[in-house]
Amino acid sequence: MELEAAKMIGAGLAAIALAGAGVGIGIIFGNYLSGAMRNPSAAAKQFPNLLLGFALAEATGLFGLVVALIILFAF
Amino acid sequence: MTTNPMHQFEVYRIGPEINLGDINLSFTNASLFMAISAISVLSLLFFGTKKKSLIPTRMQLITEMSYTFVAKMINDTTGSSAKSYFPFIFSLFMFILFCNMIGMLPYSFTVTSHIIVTFVLAAIVFIGVTIIGFVKHGIKYLELFVPKGVPIALLPLIIIIEIISYLSRPVSLSVRLFANMMAGHTMLKVFGGFVISLGLLGGWLPLGFSVALTGLEILVAFLQAYVFAILTCIYLNDALNLHH
Image (cartoon, rainbow over all chains, first blue to last red; front, side):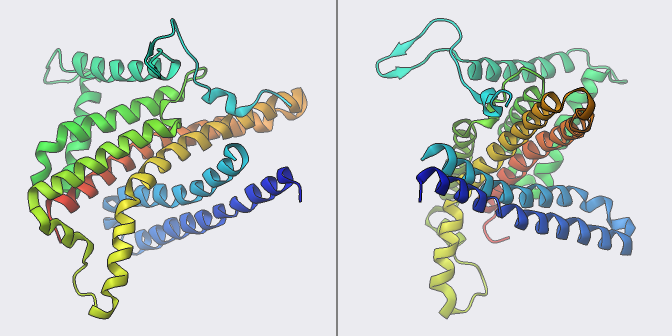
């Protein structure tokens, strides 16, 4: 196979990591909402933790993006 | 195709070329924007605390809010034993926040979208935390790798995993900030390119997307500075209060 074509396929495969980030962000916000509906008085206190979890989950997807960029531009 | 979306991350030299042996020490646009963000933090704190009135002006209010925000964050995650590390975490947070926010201005340069900048910041945190841990607990700091209540049979595996996760801290800390800033700015430029290529009829949809994405990016710029600072606090907590 041509090296260029293999690079493109590899970069595309690395983008699959975003699926995991999507699942993670969905779980975080869904669980926060269901918890906040059960006990609204405790919801505001946990909002920073929600944002922290969101940022951590989003970052794992971006690691995949970094792998894709390394494949495309660094090799 | 319009211009390359990666073009915005290019580092170029401003002014004369300065060489110190083999090291190129020229003043670049990256150093210019680092200086701009450092000066903005300093001037915010200087002018914000100049007139100390009971009813604060907007400048004073922003300064007090950022102070109490970081102080509360350190107190909540690390406890009162980390009070002496407040200046470091505050300057780290403000510097990253201002770098990210100034990067959101059109035609500016995002310093934190370069891995070397974020990696140096993360390496300072990692090395500093490790030194603090060993100074405070001596050789007992290695107990960090031995979680309590783990069966003896599992222990060798757990210790290896803990050491790997400890060593990967600076990598994940730096790559998180770098990847978020770079991906966000690339995405903004790609959508900006769609506005041009779709023309007067179809360009409105990506234009609306760009506006929404700019809002999201401002949120991410704040969040990543917050996450960087709070993870520093959590790592400090590991070093200061072993097994708590």
